[in-house]
Length: 298
Length: 265
Image (cartoon, rainbow over all chains, first blue to last red; front, side):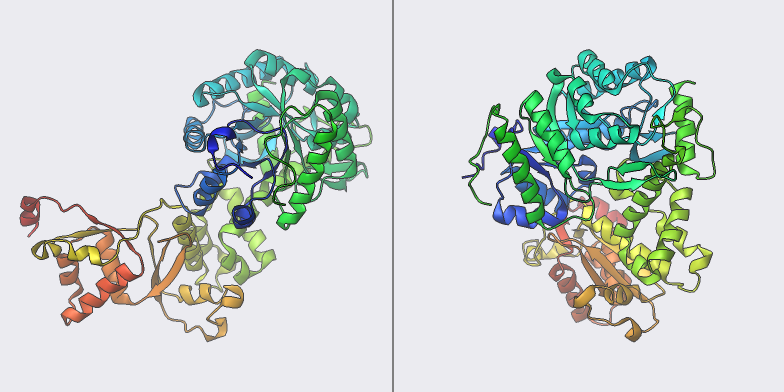
C-alpha cells in the first residue's frame, strides 16, 4: 500500500518519478499510480490559491515531490531576484519537497525574463558567479540544491572549462548536488559533434543526486547538419535509454524523472515510460532503496 | 568581453531576429550552421505566444491561430515578461488588443480578453470559504443594515459595451449553450469567481452588478440598498439571495465601531 504519511516523503526514492501536469491531477489522485515521486515547476504554483495548490497539496500527501525551478537565472550576470527567492522559500516551507533543483543556464537580463534556458560560457568569471549564486540560493532556501546540465545549441569562443569540469568545480566549491539530464547530454553532445558516452564518463560521479530523461525532436540546420531540440514532447528514444543504462551501470541507480512538458499524452503513456525507467534502475544491481513494491496499483 | 555585456548582446539577438549573432557565439560541429542560434529566437517567442494562447483561448479562437500568433508576437516584443512567474503574464494584453489596428474589425476583442484575464485571476486567487445566507440571521437584526460583506477574493467584475459573456459562452465547446450567430450585439455585465474549485463565469443583471460593485467597495448593506434606489424590499431580498446563493460571500466583515458608523451617517 502507498503510505499516506508525508514524513517518509522527505527524500526522493531511487525510483522513476514523473513530471506532474494539470491534465493528470485527477487521474493521479483517483488511481494513485505506482510511481515513486512527482516533480513540478515551482513557477506554476506561484499563484495564491485555486486548483494548482488544491491538487498539489493532496498529491503531496501520497508522494514525495521535487521542485524543479526554471526561473532563477543561476548563470545570469544580474543579482538573483530576491522576490523570486522568497516565493521559492514560501513554496518549500509549504510543500516540504524532497528536492529542489535548477539549471546551469540563464533566463533573465536587463530587458526582462526570456522564458527559456539560455547558455553561458564556461569561464573563471562565470564559475565564480554561478558559485556565488548557488551559495545565496542554498542559504536563502536553507537546503542543498541540485544543478542540472543544460541542452545547448551553440557554444562560446571563450571557454576555460569543459562542461563536465565546470559542473564538477561548481559542485566542489558550492556543495550543491548535480542533476544529470541524460537527454540533455545526448542533445548537447550531438549538437556539438561530441561523444555522449565520453561525457557521462567524465561527469563527476560523487555529486550526482538525480537523473532526468525526456524526449527530443530531431531536426537539421540550414547546412543540413543534424540539430536536436530538447522539446519534452514525446517518448524517450532508444539511444537515450541506452545512454541511461550506461549511466546507471557507471554511477548506480538514482531517482530518475521522466519529463514531458508539451503535447501532454494520456497518463498511461507516462506510466509506461516510468516503468521502463524503473526496470532499468532495478537491473543496475545497485539499487539502494525502494520505498514501495513494484506490483502495487498500476 | 565581460559576461554581463556578452549576455546583453546574446539576449538582444534572441529578441531581435534582425540583429547579428554575437561573434563570441560559435558552433563547434564542423558541418553546423551558426543559424542554429535561431532555436533560441524561436523558443523565446513561441513559448510566450503559447502562454498567451493558454491564457486567452477564446480570443485565439475568434481570430484564428495565424492572426493570434502574429498579434501575440507583437505584444511579446513590446511587453516581454518582467518576472519568471509566467502564470501572471499577459495583464497588458487586453489593452494592447483593444488598440491593435489589425483587430479593429472585432471591436469586442479587447473586452473578451479582459474577461479571459479575469477568469485567470479568479483561478489563481486565494481560496476562501463560502458563507451561507443563514449567517445573516445570526446577527442582531438592528445591526444587519450596517454589516459589510466580504466577497470572495477570487471575484472579478467585468462590464462591457459588447456581449462578451455570450461570446465567451459560445466558445465553450460541446457544452456551449449559446451559438455565436445568435448573440445580440448589446452590452453585458457579470463576474468571474471561484467559490469552490472551478471558476464560474456569470453574466448577471445590471442591478445585481451594481449591488456587487457596492459591496465590493465595502459599502454597508443599507447604504448599498439606498444607492440602488430599488422599488421594493423584495428586490433587495432577491439580490441578497443571489449573492449568497452564487457563493460570492466569504464572510461578514467585522463591523466597524458604532461611532464610525454614526459618523458616516
